[in-house]
Length: 468
Ligand code: SF4
Ligand code: SF4
Image (tube, rainbow, N blue to C red; front, side, top):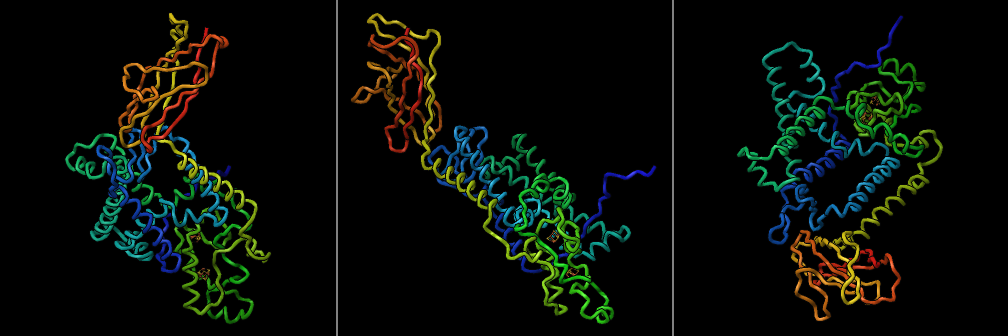
């Protein structure tokens, strides 16, 4: 019985370099992204004494993310969640509008693969030279070129791994530790892991990542509709294709504009022939458009056979509709989440506190007849300077509080709690209620913590006061 393999043999792809409008556009976008990635850990930012002066720092031991003037604490988990959701919706919005444009122009896999391809081309030559080199028998020159290429890839990979690590530690200090061999093991491990994965993904696996490994490539089809931008070949203009000049003359008007030169195929980084129709391997990079435009210019062809278009336009069913249901839904959701981030930041209070009632005992009957409940109040000062706060309680008649070991008070008698910058201080608080004409059992009370300075913020916490 004949068996069919479920695995396709890997065929090495030798994409040909092609200059053109979309190539230039991609290089410009790559340049911006690479500059941001490699330079950001070196940007310094003025912060108060004792705080890190790195503009972007993911301080894992300190459980804080510093992004310029913003310090994100674990308490700001909503902000991170909103940011991630907004990024995901932004990606869906972009995909519904312009297809896999993120894959072709912004994805790190594409950028690093193109960078590695650039090094390969500079060292081994363009497509034909690389094909000939791989087919040629082993020689000193071949070994030299291959070693040079892999060394350049390893250099880029190492630089990438190192840069990633610099986001999690003070960059100049981390470099010093790596050079002197005193860097912590997790940093070294992460750096080597990133070096290895960059080398394998961008140098060896390349288009396989986009075709087989990337989960986004698999499910983004559901965001496509007939108005989504795709890169498409127009068969009504190009077919029947014919490469032979004599035959083309004989076929006269029956012949299409495609001269079957394969230029669009040889430039494709995923090795597909776009003339076979829309394929999931296409990352919408536009290289085939540049290639066909170049051919058109050389042979004096006026038709633009490959271009960004939509299925609607291809069908001749009118113009692409940019504003449509799913675009509006994504845009609305994006606005809501971005708006949520703005509101969160605008109302952000650099202060957090919790009030935990003691259970042993639940309440204490005092000699003057009042009832006392004890609490532990933990105050987190999220500012970069030391703060002094007043603490008060309300919600029951005749309710007052005192704080253990606190002797300084405001003129109104409110206790003053001090908390150093960026730290948590616990306080033991005694709350008393004198009036007897209050029902027994649980009563909701409200604790209010208010900074004396205008930058410290104010916050409330609901808790429970127990009466016998
Ligand atoms: S078919 Fe064209 S746009 Fe799609 S990946 Fe290949 S070269 Fe890029
Ligand atoms: S580059 Fe243009 S002319 Fe050449 S094969 Fe592709 S579609 Fe045809």
